[in-house]
Length: 336
Image 1: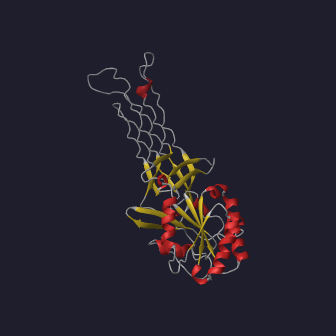
Image 2: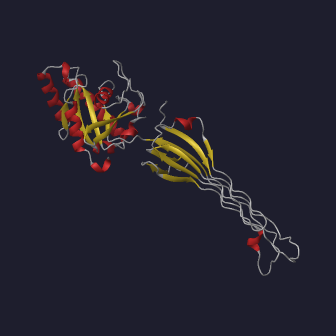
Image 3: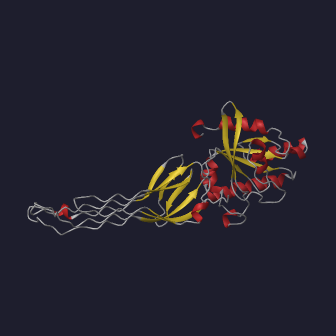
């Protein structure tokens, strides 16, 4: 299934039913009087989070959503039927934004959470409502009002405990394949990951966490180079970031430069991401000498003095299980 994480749609509440103009006409009852009933309210439009959906692709093919109209009132003071509400299922993690005002209408982060996005129209009044001591036979009614119409943008932000960050081919996809059942594409050329991938890391005895692999970030992403910033929003909900650095080049200056590029682009996108818990991971230790590894560690710790630095090999699996246990221990239970 194609992964789609942004789209625009139009939602419209149902029109309210019109009031009825009617008078009693019954045998043996003189001066029957008005008996026109009210119309029914129009249906409203709701968005509801549904955990069996993981993409917004269906909204690419249907862009207009309308709730049902309320029916008109009838004689004998019969009220029209309310229009049926329209409930639209969206993936958990969907943010709903009003296109015209840029207002965030809601953020659906739990399964079953529901929010109204378009109010249905109010019902019209029948002529019974206008009866008074001075107006015994009113011929006045009112029509139902139109429902709200809104252009809204749906933006899906994946819900994960840990987000993977790094340059293309740093080993993010290899890491998620090594520690979970997720199977993102892995190859020896840049940008093999074109869409975010989620994996569940299980450590036994009910201990687990969700990890998100997003497409690699390169210098100039803020200028839409590479895949730009499109998928970085998926890191905003993560409680921890894992910054994976490829040290296979065995070049201290290159390693440091690559690490700084990621941080600079991250700051341009959202400075709050820098304040999240972060762990630096040096990958591909299976193909460099111990002495070179120590040099790399020292260089990285100089630019990230407050962060923990760990060494792994996604190819052989060395230190990956230990790293996952460290990640779990550092996650806030309230975020899982």
